Image 1 (tube, rainbow, N blue to C red):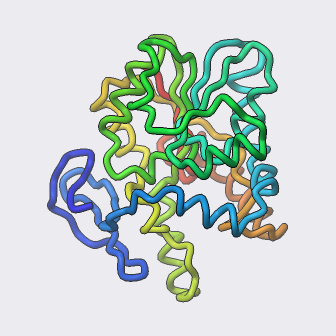
Image 2 (image 1 turned 90 degrees about the vertical axis):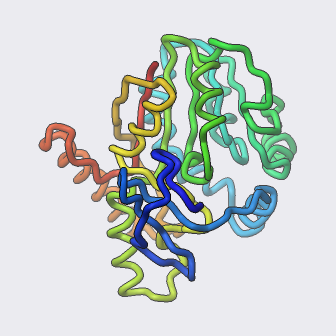
Length: 278
């Protein structure tokens, strides 16, 4: 990336370097993005993950977060939901068990779609980019994107499409890292653990948003109503199953919620869970 996706400025400064990859901060709007030219080989990404992780444990690590989401948005309601970038399909699998919901998923990786079909017996996932799948306008009650937005170099076509296919009274839900906490954490990790590989993950996370810059991005596409909510975090730290690290992560989560509310919602040091309406 050689320019800012929000304001299109190419004026920037290096704010971090990870394994030779510069991470820039836009001098005009403050957005943070990686210079890495991301490969479009998403099948390769999922091939690595399928080979190296116990994916059913990884599903378990998301359980608290998904349960919070279901309790807040799904229980007692009905409608049509689209999960964009649904990966291996675990979220789709769990939400499909709720009566009254027509659940669909889309995923660009053929490897991930085949995993969902063959391992999870899911037939409601389509392979391809959502803007190429011809969903009808004003169709979905809820659209979710779990840890997808940060991977997309330029989300222009995607966000234009999602606004069209979301119902006028629908909810668009995004989960993505928060640069306001990820950057300080990355600097601390790099200082103490130089051989650590999980800093900002600059070769995968191309755009890393803050509460301010993600709203700036979404406002460009006509979204106007934003609400930051707090769901339990993924019960893992950089893929680790350490009970101690999970405890620390959960304590940080509860602290972040307290700080968010006592600051009258002006300080958000949690990952970004954003509820968006037209």
